[in-house]
Amino acid sequence: MPKVLIEKLDDYGRGITHIDNKVVFIKDALPNELVEIEITSNKKKFSEAKVTEYVRKSKDRVKSPCPYFEKCGGCHLLHLTYDNTLTFKQNKIKELLKKNKINKNEEIEIIKSDFPLYYRNKISLKIENGKLGYYEESTHKLIEIKECIIAKHSINEVIKNYKLLNLENAKLTIRANDNDEILIIIETNEKEYNIELAKLKEKIKLVGIIYNKITIYGENFFYERVGGKLFKVSFDSFFQINENITTKLFALIKENIDESSVVLDLYSGVGTLGIIASSKSKEVYSIEIIKNAVLNGIMNAKLNQANNIKLMLGDVSSTVDKINLNFDTLILDPPRKGLDKKTREFILTKLPDKIIYVSCNPNTLIRDLKELETNYEIADFKIMDMFPFTYHIESFCVLNKK
Ligand SMILES: C[S@@+](CC[C@H](N)C(=O)[O-])C[C@H]1O[C@@H](n2cnc3c(N)ncnc32)[C@H](O)[C@@H]1O
Image (cartoon, rainbow, N blue to C red; front, top):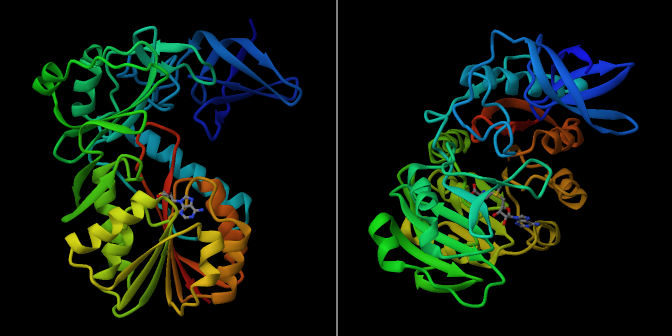
């Protein structure tokens, strides 16, 4: 077994070392630790390994509060204190900016989650042969769980009582709102269901069950109250997974919208950011690809007395250039793949005064910022810790036209 010194962490929170000039990625290993490893996969350019013995542990190492951490692929940083996970994220962004030669002189501020555990309002699990769990990282091996310490307590109540669903093999998605009401979404090949509804309703505040896209109990949506606003959210509509950070995100959006501006809000989900912006702006135009989310958005505009917002259904890339709109502020909140080429070109033709870019993937964010940097300067760059104890990084950027 080779004995190696861990040099630093990679983007996914794995320890990095080199053996004969080849990089080796090691799960659950921290910088400055001396560990004995076993190579688990040997590729041309890199190897992967697991620790067989910790010869010298890092002073930063803490005991993971989750018993499944070593195997489960959901969290990546539970062997660090919360503050050290934040430093990891700050360093990652600093390195990315430096590597891409993007100027950002001031410190990158990080907005903490007030609840770094039990925060997720949506999780997806597998049920196999009646057992419930997550897949082990990069495998289809089920890790049975009895609790998930990053999911909200109300979701954990469903986990505790999942046997009442009487499912053998299924994908189970559980969503909870701010009031701990639960929506259960089941996808399965099983033709018949036998859910012990009365018992389940004694244990949790059940709003609805959707079985292979059909609502078999209650509603197929819930209401979510965040940042003083009320949102209707259908089972298939996106909603930010951390309510505490979402409240802080809403405050930042509002702060950065100029009075009487005309806003284009792309990738708008159920209309959240557009509705927040609408209280200060003259008009807001939103575009979103999921039909139910747009319908939710129309209802949400009414629920929140946002009368100056128009919500449109469409693919951003093929819709933006058809709407012939003059706008001065652009809100972007794309999925992980970031902006496509056509959308970047559209922005560079329109050149709005201000761009507010909310991103859940720093790699595509930096790629897009590189394209925009000739015309825009970064006025603000914050990390919002939407996904505590995982390597995922949510960023909030404000760009001003030069
Ligand atoms: C990260 S979410 C942001 C949603 C919303 N801004 C919020 O804060 O809740 C990204 C949204 O973009 C939508 N989306 C993904 N690809 C799209 C596309 N090509 N055109 C329009 N919307 C898209 C998704 O359905 C999702 O609602």
